Image 1 (cartoon, rainbow, N blue to C red):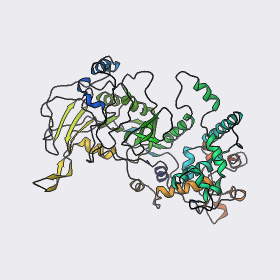
Image 2: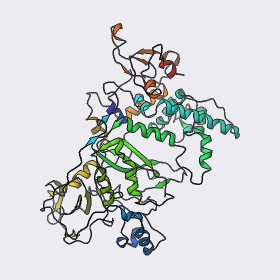
Image 3: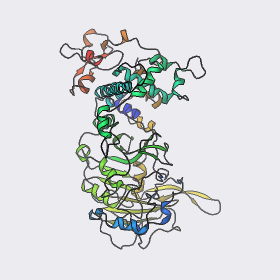
Image 4: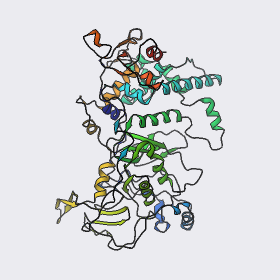
Length: 573
């Protein structure tokens, strides 16, 4: 019997962040792979020659950092840098009015500005039928829909024909959706069972032998699909390649755009969001590959990602393709955030958390004008950030010391933990009496745990910038079902895509693709009404919502079988 699970659980499992990191520590902030770019928010006189060198390794102190590496300006003098920044059009953008007031302390009262009302466009949560059980493959088909799979098949077949015309010597028969599912299932299987090379998965009577791949697909067929798999139309690729400024993402856009659309369609986020970077591991020579020494995947393609803070669900993402041909008015960090935020889709009143690569007064004020709140660590040399004021923190300040300055909607807070931490916010007061436990030295070799003051924005940043452990996500499910681990979820997905049982026995096609009742009921009269689910073909192809009590036994997919709309036959063509 195939296992079903609540949709919110399955969504979490399908899109679990493989490189989930808590951003309380500074390990994610020291990036060495940033490309050169002009950021108008940096103040030239605060830049030292040492900034062009690689920053020290990450600290282990459990607080956010403010020392993220500034983009390099190698080969340019300081005067040239200042000249470039001074003529940037970004100076016309909104900036807070700065005063010369000294830094205040935690004993001085502060009041946060009135926050915009939280008005999401849709009810937050999963945007699918919450009353039906969903198998791992059901969730997979939400994000890799039938139209998407058919497009990949069509383009792959075109690419194979072109390669054969160029003289490639291998047998080829057109791939269909069912075979593409098996191919993808084997790809996912290789992430569960790691062997030295692809050929090893088909070795027989060997110490490395595994049985599943040979049951699903011959080795040569798997290799030929791997050589020809193509997401875009090969004929359109030629046109794109001939352009002077060709689209570097053209070959992956069909699938990338479909997945992005599905991410936004099937889930609407709660109030707290976070902006961060993720690395797609690869060493391919794409012209976009970067090295980031402090990421789990050090070599790869960088994504700017908007995610829900509570569960890490990806809401939107953009690929960083390198330095733009046209200089940015506001800088890469500003544009990266603004490109991810879509009020027409999200609504208003959201709170967005980010690290010091993105944070700037100009960005926060722009988000505020769109009715979004913001909070993030910041770099002291950003334009518009207070500096050189009296009563500032020093290296001799006690642990737990707080300093803050409010300028209109912006509050700039500095806090001394094991080092100085700087946070800016438009949604929090500077300090509300919160404390955090830290070990404080009292005499030679004597450390005592004490409650020390912690600013409100830092408490919120540490709560919402870090991801949530998968086991914690499952605790919030509304249905009382046994949680499925990520490993078991992926294993079951592999079995369903490959058309085998959990024991690896292939399902017989001649008897498995038959229409059966969704609900296992004793009374025959109830089979036509009980356990209705949305027909997947109607939803994905016709963009209509019809419920049906029937499903394919092998695919475990709900499909209509009525006379005037036989989706069952169309699905398996």
